[in-house]
Image 1 (cartoon, rainbow, N blue to C red):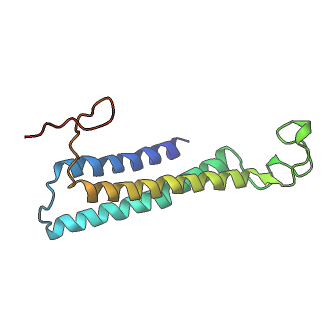
Image 2 (image 1 turned 90 degrees about the horizontal axis):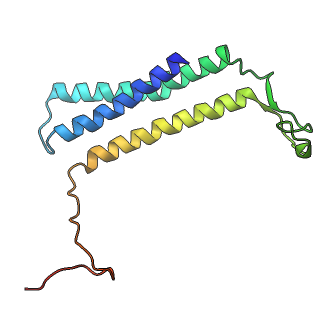
Image 3 (image 1 turned 180 degrees about the horizontal axis):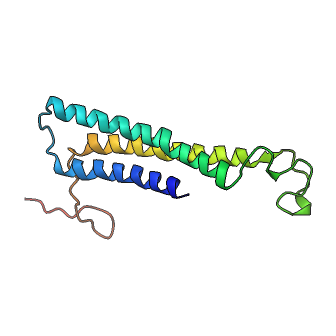
Amino acid sequence: MVAFVTSSLIGLLGALAVVLYGKRRPVGAPLSWGQAMAAATFAFFMGFWWYGVVPNTWILYANNELGWRKDKFLAHAGQALFGQEWLNWWPLDITMAVIQDLIVLLVYGVGITLHIAMWAYWQDRAKEKPAVVPASRYGRPLVRKG
């Protein structure tokens, strides 16, 4: 559990580093060869981290410490689901390995969401924020003519 939480925190800190550096770096500033290589290495590291290390630490935790294997069931076909007799119509066997894989899918979803969000943030940091025009209670903008 410690490895999974630590690897997730390192991944989130990497995303935070992109935001903090994006606020500090001037838009349109020239990029040197060394800076480009450092950025490419960081981007590769974050991809490796979110799509390799974090899911691996979850799988190791689920297999070793939780014991979620194919022979451990969450629900059996035709038996009471979650201890409720009225749910005995359930047609599927759900093993804990399936639940483990669904959680890995969620980890990949977090990784791809952060990946896209960081690229979108970096590309849109040059856009100016729209000016807020005060509105009347009827929703029309309050602007004086002349």
